[in-house]
Image 1 (cartoon, helix red, strand yellow):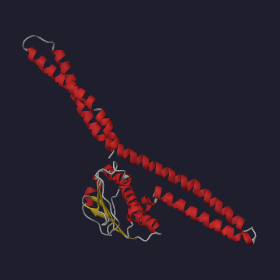
Image 2 (tube, helix red, strand yellow):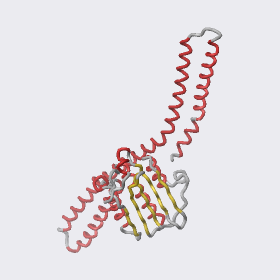
Image 3 (cartoon, helix red, strand yellow):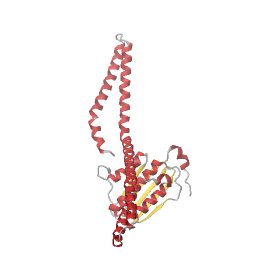
Image 4 (cartoon, one colour):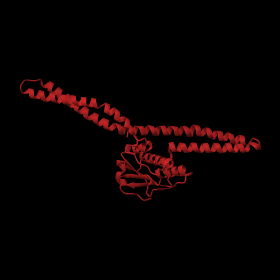
Length: 295
């Protein structure tokens, strides 16, 4: 997931061996002192001190191993939170600053258009069209960076709005299938499912040359299932997308893994691509989610 982490871990291997060697020496020394206890009197305090030191070293080794194993997952979660925070910041900047400036320019153009001679009306109309297109694109980018409608409209409606907006000028025939109410879906799961679909649709438009796209959302006893399938050119999925430079695919896997879910990419050259993600239910909604709800 994070190839750069492998280098520090290799560099720490000698330090780890040194710690284990220290622990082994403590154990050997403790056993030797216990064997000498029968031959000559040794201070009991010294033996207790050595026993405590040995237990401390062993606890430190075990705790350190658990901490190292947790760091990649914690780092992935932190990176995703920072990424979402930056996207929200950029979205606000676009919407509040650039969007307002374009709106003000449009209002000033309306005032000017009512006062210019007739021969300049065509130029004002062309400028107005450019401002409206620019304002529309800024709003679209702002919505992509920060899908505010997730909280108010829900995951299904937000995905549908994104597909309508993104595929409006393409030749792709698409469908969004969701035959159940998505109750119990947390904000984190909804955001991850939205971002994975967003990345998959972007990749399809850039590389797949697909004609058809199907997105499915389904409740299951194990969690929320997301399926994205196209009939495009397909590709050969890498075993490690990050190392292969497939940052989009790596980002999808990181989002699923951060929520203790799974993501599987199935693709062959000429046979399209299918992405299946599963996000487990939170403990408080797991039992309720076992029974699918009909709309």
